[in-house]
Length: 119
Image (cartoon, rainbow, N blue to C red; front, side, top):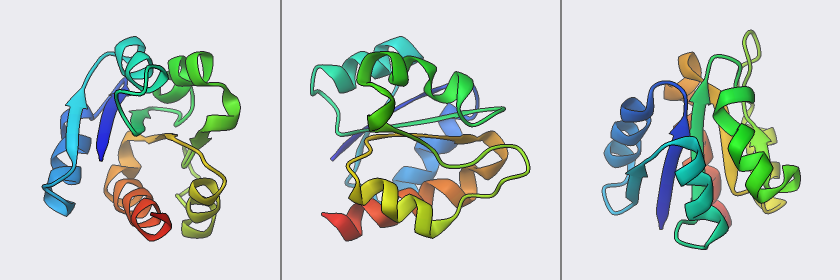
């Protein structure tokens, strides 16, 4: 599995956490545009991005390149990630996930667990 990491904040923290959870996952930290292009061309399986709102800078390029139906805002300011929503998003085929920088520690494991459970 390959995950590209875009977004505006906490890119290295997202990558570090993914590697701690599962060292076998290939990760690549890129600009938003490059990460979305990796997804569009099939060079990556999933996109993770963090920003201050969870949907703007985290997912804007992914939404533009992949379509809204492939993207999910997992958390926003004042709105914690919810496991049932993440599970549902993965089951529905979402491939790009955005969340706020302060929810990295909660959102990343939640998304990875849902992906692994759905594989």
